[in-house]
Image (cartoon, rainbow, N blue to C red):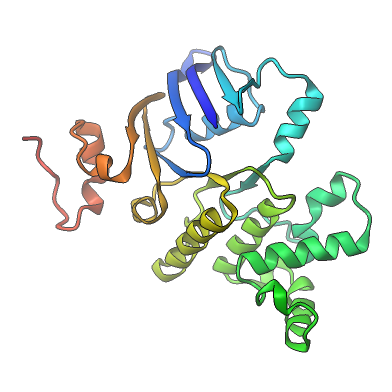
Length: 266
């Protein structure tokens, strides 16, 4: 579980996080929403230890990340998978090389280990048949073709799936998704939503999704946090989000309301 208490951060005279507090429960999908520039990305950088807070604490599985040593922080980061906006694949690398890059950077050189992990995660995200079919002619043919492709050979949806596969390497406890459906058409966005929901269910991983796509929130979220002005404005379930009365929440949700009209506060 991730517990954030009173987190504050300023850059010069600009205050970005202002006493932010929230709980990210284990085994659930938490969607973090809010306007551009409200502090979502800065929050994630604090959670993974890339930024130091001016005040407040972040506890991950009972450990204060500001007080752990470099070795423990490195070990923590290996338990976190990150899916970047736009997938952020390396254009010069093949699908296989993109997927196993973290293992290679951490010193893994055994070819069988690298191949086995690539097959596992590419099957998990639906780019290959079920892993139980590994060794069959059809599976091996599909794998050989896919592993050799470059990102330029892939559709937008396939690139997202490769990005998710890369994040799954090493069986992380937490996966952070940064705008996973941005730039995708509605059908492909639904497929990515289904993938995220399926992975959360099968792997029991704790997922944190930054998104502006409220349709994704309604599809996949167990827990929703809305940030506004560097503070937590709302925290609760999707059902509670629908019933929220804060004007800022109502305004944010208005364009996604089925009848297309702003809800009025009784």
